[in-house]
Image: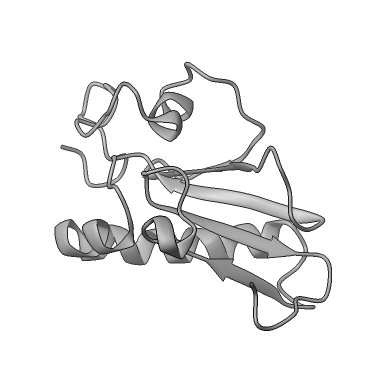
Length: 131
C-alpha cells in the first residue's frame, strides 16, 4: 500500500473498499460528488444537504466505519483527516472567521453513514449546544 495515496503503486483503489458504502462509492467515482479537494488519502466534497453556507465532508479513501475504528487502525491517517479538514476550511475562506469540525460516531452520536468523515461547517455563527 502506498503511504501517500492510500492505494497501491499502480493507482488501484484503496484495499479497504466496501461496495455498499455510499462514501466508498463516491471515492471510487461510482457516485458523482462536488469535489473540493483530493489529497490522495482523503477526499473532500460538498454535502448534498448543507447545514451552513459552507458544509464540506472530508472522508478517508480507505473505509473505516467511524472515528474510533480509524484511530485504532491508523492513528496517522486520523491526523491526516483532521489536517485536511483544516485545509478545506482555509480553502473555503472560513478559517479566519471561524468554523466547526464535526465527527459523529455511532447512531446516538448522529452518524448516518458508516464511513468516517469530518463535517466542515462555516460561513455563519455556530450556536451551542449543537443539538
